Image (cartoon, rainbow, N blue to C red; front, side):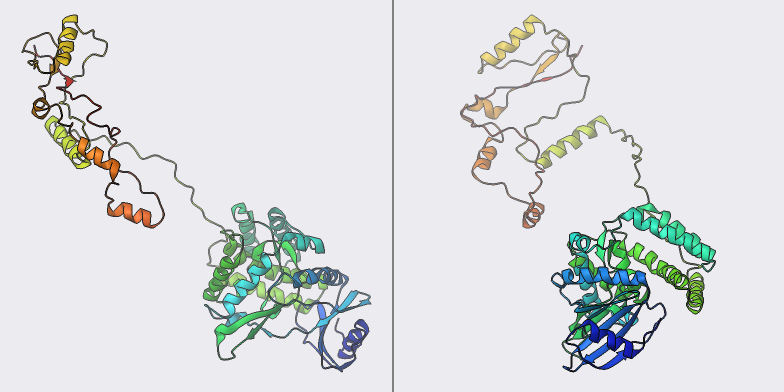
Length: 475
């Protein structure tokens, strides 16, 4: 249904009491237009916009949007239509609001980087940051993630029943919708029909494209709480890939919550499903020319995606298999001892660990002979007397080491490493480059020094005259 300009001017004058129309211009009718749109100028040189619904369904959507727009006016950084008057008509209510200045955006001409692309991303993020309670208060539809997916599947069934949707597209979309992993998202307040004509942009400097800013967003009849990817459908299909990436990057930076990782993927799916939705709207409106046009667009899409990969998120499962154990190569006995000694020398002088010769270990359950215990006790009581090593062929299975010459000369001589440990209590150990780099970034450096005993004073610890180690009796 198309109303004449005179009818639109009369509606505006009746809806707003102090509006005396002196000029009117009807917007050009576009395919799929659901409202008759007119621009009216009154005697005070004020510009107005009048929307008249074409069906009762659209009239109900205009009423819902009229409840939402005053709530958004205080929460968005750009303007939205503010209804000033209504007029009841058979299809619902016509609405009149002040004209919003700005230029509509041609998405195909948007360049990547700062400017229009970044401003669009920020504008979409500002809308998605609005609290859900605001939209719920206005009574807009609310859909969770699973409901959004099942609604798309229902549209596939309806589209197949029309006979105008190619089978290849139906199969392609069905596989995409059955990939449940991509349809896990947090429902978000969305515009629902965000196209270039809904975005009004102004420039502070006409010669500088980067001075752009989104002045207003119009057309809120499809507002709801649903998939955030719905607001990227038209942007994905009409913008260049580089411009779309700039939009998404600006959107991700401005969003309060981090966008889900499958947002781009669902935006691509939604961009193709837009043609199906437009076909169904044309069928419901019973407009044969428009149905023919939408069917031709679907056929063209079939040719474009004939060689394209499926709309399925491919995420390889993480491997849980452990690597097969590799047996260490045999090392000769002498080389093993030398390698252990070299490792200990690199660890530092504070390590007092001794390297034992390889050999058979002593039996832990063996009983030490009484005479052996007496001999060992005598060696510890008499510090000045040196105990000779066990003779070859004796029954003793302990080998007593000779005392260190430095320890035998003076009782005041500290044990090896004592000076280094005492100095460690008074000053911090030197830091290597790795520790310095870790502390520069605010992280606690990892302690890679070998584990040593707590530092103790040499005066509190009696000097030792020898130490014993298990050995293997000869003979």
